[in-house]
Length: 207
Picture 1: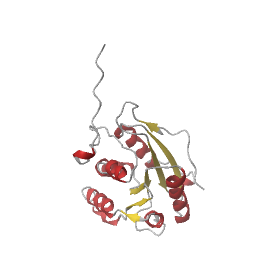
Picture 2: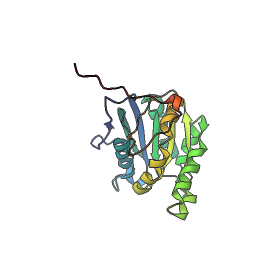
Picture 3: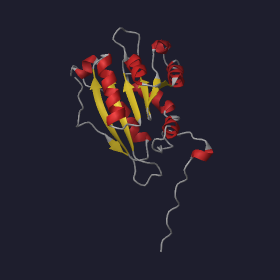
């Protein structure tokens, strides 16, 4: 059974003065032991911390933890995309070769189109640190106007990966007709073609 810890922060952030638009993100931790309460989930909060540091435009998050069961993962992904209206869903865990690692299969099952470039990029990043990065089956795909992306399960690997991968995510969401997401350049410099960039409004002159 999935649970949604309500006391974990940050579940929202950003600045109302941003040139970006409000966005809703989904964070889904896939772990048998974390879902059973055997240990505290650290990977989901690591993703939330990244959003708090890297996203300048207003955002809020839907956070859940489920077991390594494909039907549960699929149900959570569908709910976050279709009912909660998340423009981006980030999963953590369940991407290795072990028998119960089924997050990529669940992701593919609920998506209409896959985005294999993200998996390729994440494995390339991981190989800079450990040779076992080739064992990762991380992938990404699109459901409606929602981008779903699989991240590793370890907080350290999440930051090593997401800090680079997120550079293209705001523009991908923009192409899906989702909100315009502004980042904090000192953390992540989002890339967009010049014609698709917004310019910050000049401050009003004092009267």
